[in-house]
Image (cartoon, rainbow, N blue to C red; front, side):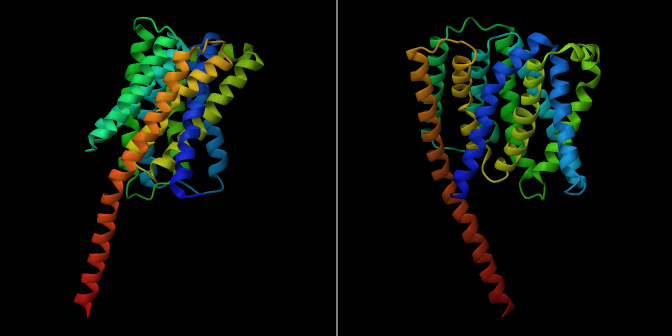
Length: 307
């Protein structure tokens, strides 16, 4: 399988688990306070990272510094998302977070052709149909928190691409630091709710472990690995399919009604995403070739001077 397709599949897998995370987080926050859910989510992932890191050595200074920075922005995303989904429906949360799709290239300051924004417009039209298909009410507190989460997540994706470009930063080590930062940040806010964990049932614990190991550890690690090997804009496009998975999970497991408009909206999001991918890839290819030619030309000039 070509490397590009493999990276795309990894990012798509992240979108799937994140799409499923809204229903999971909403159910978990019905049983436990939000800070407690976030602390367990980060704490379990941090323990798993620590166990794996024993086989791969310690952390470099850059991995500690940039891991802390990314940990802060990732924690901000999860705070906004978790409080947001606690105050709105899982479907609404998955729909609104898809705005990351159009926010990422804006924050990344990428000069993309107009066709990209047409593709993004198709995606947003799909979101509109999904919204009407699920009867999205007037924006409330939860909806506004999800909107803020979309802005911060777009900034986080761009930041991951910027800080990892040209630096020898290992995804596992960065993820471990991010999880440690999140655990430390939520320890005190979660303390009052920790006794409730002893009375938590197996279903809620399964949800917490899923959030920690799949929506947390796997997603953080996979996103960092993939963004290091592609552009932030392309990553944003694939992660923009998240509302489709949120809708499918909500309909399949959460009992939400799937209407014809919902299906059409999901189809438009997928179509717009793949169209945007093609535009972004075609736009990036000449720039990559120009850099490669410049490197070769420089090498040839240096060799000629050496002779």
